[in-house]
Amino acid sequence: IYPNASKAGHAAQWYGTDPANVVTCPNPHDPRTVWRLSDDAAHFVSRFDLLTADIVQVYAACATRRVDKGVGHLLRIFGKLKAKGLKVRLILALANMTNVEIQSELRHEISDAGLTTDEVIVPGFVDARFTQETPHSLVCELARLSDVFLFTSAGEACPLTLIEAMQSGCLIGVNTAVPAMMEYKPPGAIEFLLPHQNNIAELSMTTKETAHSVAVPGSEKTITGEAAYDRQITTIAEATINGLSRSHFYHSRKTAFRTFSTEAIGARLDAIFSL
Image (cartoon, rainbow, N blue to C red; front, top):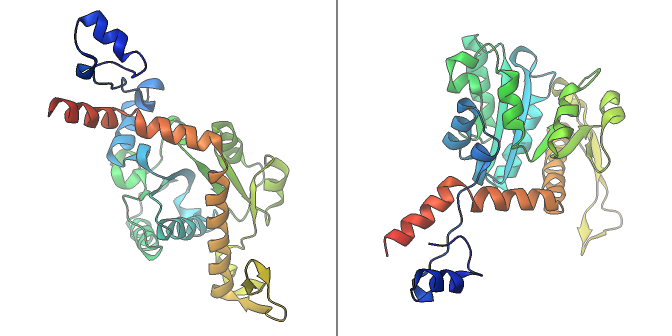
């Protein structure tokens, strides 16, 4: 077994064998070893298969303020992403999860968005140590695996989580309804307009039918409430997919995660030794 194919002939000569007997297989090298992740972070990576997910996001908030922080919006967006055939993982690092009623409500909200608790990972559901708070160190470790940070909050003064997300190198999405986000946002960020979750009924937008990507004259119509909200959520999901599709950083990371993970290399070795 040799780590690359380009020198397989040299390896065969060195070991005095036929080149056909040289099988290539790289060494496993994934974030759990490269970044020396803590045991807790490595557990989340392995248990929820974060390395092979198409889209990963970490979102920290207080469970009692999750409506103000737009958690419901985020669940709907990830539900749309899943409906488009993507393997999604949304890590909701929620504090103040000790209330049983809050836990029950959150489980229903996840289900109503068409998602499961394997796709929406709430540390407080996984380990009782994290019901009151997910350690900042663990949030930061998992955030390094994030592909996007869609900031759906309805109000911020100094969005520290946005700054942290920007430092992770992931695709950023900001709510234009929050002025502070617009002050802090990086160039190239996705911009969207989302109301407070309690004000969805007031949402209104004008839509047009298109034919061959050209607007059809006289096809304008106004949609409101839930219909307008669903259209906006769909638009955000599509913008997220388009943004990631143009990111070389995203594609190179995903290639490294999927190709050189311990599990991927282990599967290749299993196949080799089964010959």
